Image: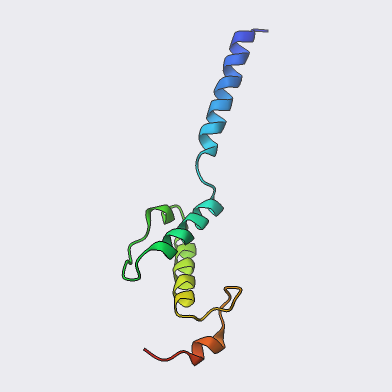
Length: 91
């Protein structure tokens, strides 16, 4: 058995695995996007860079969720509350 070659192969495999794991998971990307959406100015309609990995439908849901929360249409658990929407003053 060629130990230097085996050691080099294992080292390369570990390096590649570490390189791949440095990318955020989809769930981590979603969490980063939520933070970016909360932090952006209300007039800013541009898609934050950290939201780029998200599927378009997921991004749209996050934006809608942030809008409903900003309008006060969610309950203490962050769920949509129809009654709060109906009670809110019209624009």
